[in-house]
Length: 280
Ligand SMILES: NC(=O)c1ccc[n+]([C@@H]2O[C@H](COP(=O)([O-])OP(=O)(O)OC[C@H]3O[C@@H](n4cnc5c(N)ncnc54)[C@H](OP(=O)(O)O)[C@@H]3O)[C@@H](O)[C@H]2O)c1
Image 1 (tube, rainbow, N blue to C red):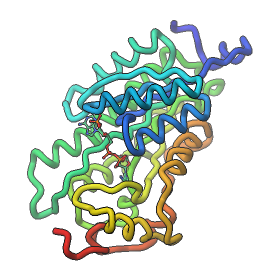
Image 2 (spheres, rainbow, N blue to C red):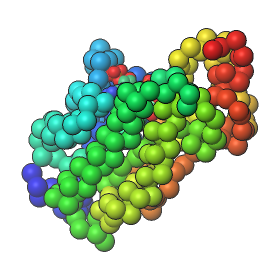
Image 3 (cartoon, rainbow, N blue to C red):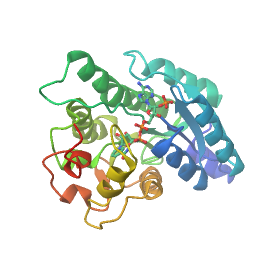
């Protein structure tokens, strides 16, 4: 369907919903992202790895909002993951253009600089850095094939990398994860330069939103208030900020912290350890 572009659609006065790919879209922030995009009128390609049941539940919620939702499955830790996933997306969309990719799926395993192993470092880098960047390249190829050449279509396509407030507020816990997110954060400007003028690239860096790793509920309840507002960070607000970045054609090559100011409170350890020294 290579001739359906944003300009031809607008000219016809019957704009169909745009499609977004949300990786890791079945649970937690991914779920909130799918619902926020649906609430904003987008159709959703929901990527999952193992969480098929949860993905189908989110699919039903998106459809209940009157939007389309199709599922695609992939293990993003595989070195060749991006190409087949993009091919599955093309097949699922029957030629409709994908407008936005949100790289949300993430590996988050505990290690330190002293305990990091090659396989853990490489797995984090593959899932959290390499595959997201290659998915962005795939969106460039699709934009050049289907999009309206800039300036007419400028700002329409975007790649949004979900980072972490840690990239602005370093501590050495979760070392491999942090290295992978730092590499992705440093890539935002480079990739924006490289994919211009076709595709915008931005980062969104949330603060602590969900209980993870060895955290107890009590630990999470205390840690979630360690930010300038002393209030838990609402994942819905993070998701709405991602939709804002997808829809704002002037945002490019920048990273937006959405963390109640958590990144402005330096800690020598990850917040879950900082509030509970009994954790390993
Ligand atoms: N959680 C927080 O408080 C927090 C704080 C700051 C930043 N963030 C960032 O926000 C994003 C979402 O966080 P989250 O806690 O909601 O994520 P999460 O629950 O840790 O992971 C989201 C999904 O990523 C998918 N995933 C993991 N490894 C994968 C792989 N190798 N291939 C394909 N999919 C894979 C899993 O999908 P399946 O379940 O389908 O297997 C998982 O459900 C992440 O980028 C994270 O770094 C989170």
